Image (cartoon, rainbow, N blue to C red; front, side):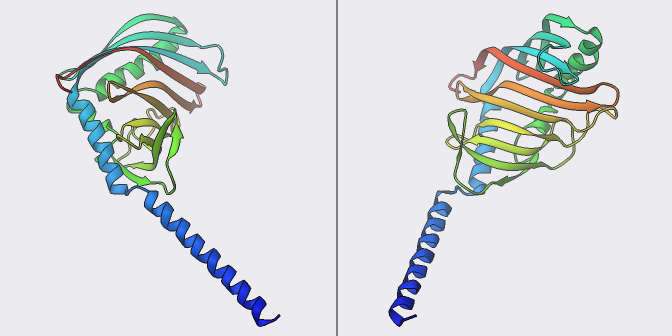
Length: 242
């Protein structure tokens, strides 16, 4: 090969290398700093707590068994009332299907939610850096429900049925939670394996409020159980100026 040809190839390789470096620099510049993203998440969760004095929401629970995701084995509609000073309380509006599942699954879920939302307990289930190790995934933001989101791998600092090992999507603008999904870091019962969970949120009055949740567990007694929760008709009371 003549010198001119080798020179042409060398210049081409140099140009490709410089272009690759440029693209990497651009991607790095577009990638937000992990510490800043985590601080944004913590601030959004704290602001929601401080400014939300209370709310009511209608929650519809459906339990599906043995891979039948069409016909619920049990259903329950609940009016949930949250008060900052006392936590959550429930009023069952309607229920149908298996009474055993209502008692052993749905009422247990309500009791657990009430317990973990008591003052003094609730901070332990917040999606913040106090409870989770958060690692920002490399790359640009992802679209989730029409919102640009930062994506983080999350790992709880301790094992608990309500703390997940998985993935978190947060709004890139305000740090509010958009979706979380993963596996519970501890089983809720000795009769069940780890539960796969997800929860989606919408921005309501500037703060993240749950809109849909799903949990899948397996048991040698009951087989596969899928629980879905849909949230609607929020009525939120905010702190003046919040």
